[in-house]
Image (cartoon, rainbow, N blue to C red):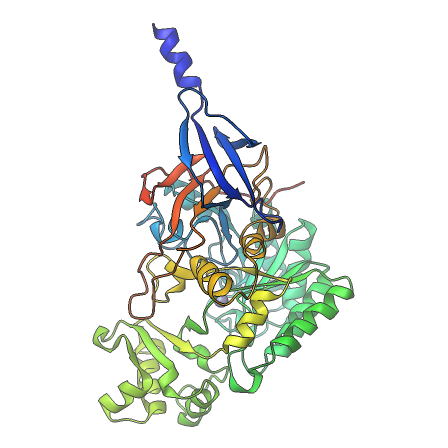
Length: 492
Ligand SMILES: [Zn+2]
């Protein structure tokens, strides 16, 4: 008896996804087929019959696609508290690429251990963060160019992070401490990442007035360090660059013709969320004229919504225009007050804003471009709706409603394209032998529900989600399975 029970336990669970419109993730159109999952892999694709004891998912009228790979995610932060990652799973996300904007942890091994210990429902892969490495080497004295010795120490930290499986180097050049780094520092570090066949991914130095020269800087880094590079959450976020998406894409196109491997990712909203200080690159935060200029550039104080403000949570959800009326100060003085309470010497509060500063037409051009893949830039429990809505929004708004791109192209930008970009082996494809990261959704009803008032509202229309062959969402219900893995940079 014992040996029979043992034999049964050894038979891996088998699932049949029957009769769905299957997109393989390469950008090819869908075909009605069946998909079999055994263990952690896709084992058969075609016309299949159910086996005895196999669980069958009827997928007629539904799309079957590789699980979505979120090219720029901050889901690592909330995962210990919410290992089921419901806001991601209900978007169809099966892998989150974290360690973005120069953040994360160094040594990256500690981050990998933390993620593994959380036993998450979804997979994670991570970049080594330039900012955390720079902080470790320079400490509080980061407001200057690094010395040759300091760059050497940073290179050693990066080298060990690359050995541990980092995908490459990320930077966040609008933030401390990345803001103070020279292009040469970044080139030197990128040479290390390139040696391990990593890539460089960057929140550019400027996403507003100076966006084009910031793109040029990334291209120069790619050229001189001989490294593939990706622009994070590409956007044009001040009035002087509105309508110039084609100029930005031309810069990328020209670099690609030169032989450089440049790509970008984008999230599907015309408003960004970050700290209030990124409204300006000027560091004279006590000067009202600085904020007057910054507000004019994003279309005025009504476009800036305070989404998080720990010194007084009752201020959350109000625009700078509304707050300015409430406290009877000018919009610029209102911001100075907020900054003093959160970033000043006496400031220990946290703040974040949602700023409507992009143009829909620019966003549509980025979504359409063959060089641009999809991301959420979202977090678990974040105050921007992208954390719960980004991927369904691409399919609802830009495929179904506006027809900006085809369904197969959108699926490619969410699956095969990032899998290739981040060298995630045997992921991002529906093909025999691939890991069974799979999403099943209804293309007619998939929809984001989160907005700035309810940023955590879950998306709808995603029916089933498999991660490494285990269902984490089944008939729109969380199963409680936590099969996610930490994916290391592939070395071949
Ligand atoms: Zn960023």
